[in-house]
Length: 408
Image (cartoon, rainbow, N blue to C red):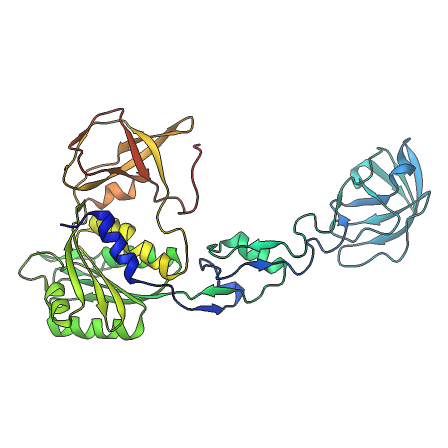
């Protein structure tokens, strides 16, 4: 039986990053930058007002109240045509360029306008309410580094510097299929004896979309070798990776195992982890395949430990695994000393320390406990009982892989 770490290393050694392409910025959410991006100009590109108010010379308003002649009105999107000189001011809106001669802005709330004269009631120092050119980003500075997985705010920064087609690693297309004659679509209203609604496909599709992959959903494939072989052939042709659920255990009707064995290039592993022990991995016609178990919690745990890191590796990310933090387990649990055991836990915080409690039953079919959980408590090989109050490692699956935690 392989250790979890050995199995993970073998998977990651087999897959490689997809090609990098210049991609439209609006479709880059979740993709990974393939090169550093530098600003071609300052942000803001010019000195501008941070407030609606009046651009003035600070030296003119040391003693208030004081009356100043208003030369013009400059809304955002226009530029001043005059300079501020002693005894004058220019009405200015937020974001409008600062006029020559002015070195401060007085908020409109601190003024009283009367025609083309404004009374300044409050003095401000030079620089007040002025956004300086380059105050956010200096021309030539790096705004996104290679390996950054682009979130909404990264996209905003790239838009601000005019990077409309950043070089990013290509979004993978992942084929998903569930197997088994007992599985029926989750929309099925009435179940007949022996049927269960399929959840694995929906969960996997959602996890992949959350990751930023394009999904080829092949639905449910029954226990028919020809049907399964055709679905896998299509997946290998149209996708960059294949994820199946069910049919990789030791049962007589586990046809995924039989068909994959016929196709060759796929290994069946017993991984020293719980849940998720049975696992298949290999290559079909150049496309990596991940054969996950059938129980829904096993599907999630195996996805987190193998599929997600491998796809992030294919997407060019240097951050492959969820963050792990140390916490306190509040209830005693019995585990299997021969395996790495993942316990579904909900968290509460005492200061910056997370306290974990099992979120429900821990059998591999109890999906409700996973829906209630915040993290997986990771119990290493060699532990058969973990006492209440023990320090444990927590894998934070509700948080992105490149962030730690300070508590709430």
